[in-house]
Length: 291
Image (tube, rainbow, N blue to C red; front, top):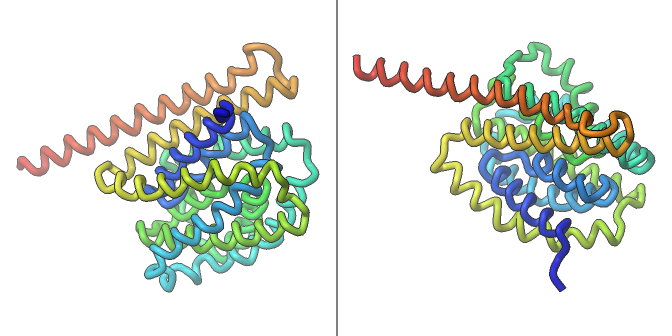
């Protein structure tokens, strides 16, 4: 018996997401979840993804372990806020209407993705003060949605962490959040047979995609690759938000897809600006070299 369209889509999107994660060090959930939520609820999807991410994040931390002594003190305040945030977010997952939770996921993701796409850089000067509430927010978001890459990437990029420090900081936070969330899900009884049945379809994609991404990023411009991935993510989230808005009856008919249209328009403008800046930067470098 052939797998249905939902499982085929899950395999393909987790493969793509694993390639991105292998290349950038994050992005697995933020790419997987918006697509998978078109077919599954968070209560079914999240427990399967969290178990996969415990191992996946452990691998990212392992390969970045040399930079851990440099960054662990900087991320310590975020750790303090994670635990209460995860408890709150796990409770939200177990009690909130699935359709409204989907809308919450999309509403949080869209501005974060577009802010990254716009290249926003505003360093936080009081890391320790901001770290605790930021950690609580990340904990709520991750345990309710399994997504934390966009806010963490925005935070650490703004703080000027270099590549390996960025990966180490991301690995430390994500190992903690995925492990704590896995434990919280257990005590709330969120592990079910439908969730477990997704694992055999997700794990092979991860095992294949991660090494492909690690090789691929060596042959591509990392920033261009990251920017294209964000565009895909933004468009999918925009479509998902439009679908949920229509399903909830908040906006009826084709007008509900105006959200998608707005996202496409904004992202296309940002994408055009990005490639123009890259082109002008390349021309400037070429002129400087010729001189």
